[in-house]
Image (cartoon, rainbow, N blue to C red):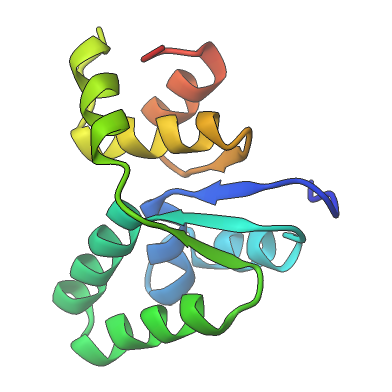
Length: 132
């Protein structure tokens, strides 16, 4: 799957599975992450979503572990707010998707990065070029 020079964007579903052992995709997320070389871009909106989910589904400490991990792992690059681009993508979109999902899709496309997600709707939209 992974190539040395390829860029990646992981959706919140992957990060949550990576940090919650009880998640049904936990093992799959671990295997995927181990294969990633090259930059792993983390849109700010993903940082916010994952921090929130981990806090409420597990603990604040687990959310802190996630934040420390992405701050310390050399592959991880946090992408600051892209609100202007995200707003345009959301308003121009013709499918029923959350603002956050559209923002993640557009971030991956704008960076020419491969999107990794466990969300079937996002996979279809990414593969089909929806929201452009």
